[in-house]
Length: 72
Image (tube, rainbow, N blue to C red; front, side):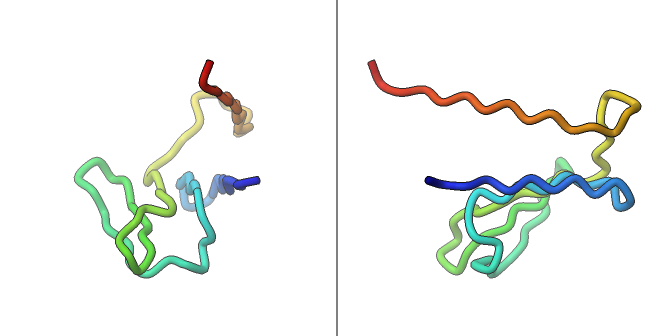
């Protein structure tokens, strides 16, 4: 099963999502929307980081919803 890793840095105000092994990171590229894309050596996006992330709620909790869709 594939795993997704989500990291909320409350000090640095970032939200990082890895959709593949972080050790495969080769290069990072910042977009104009203050999103950093982490890519492997083949240029495939394996993660992204949202800069200046602040949760909507004051309790600093992070809720993650999983939705799995299969073909009919």
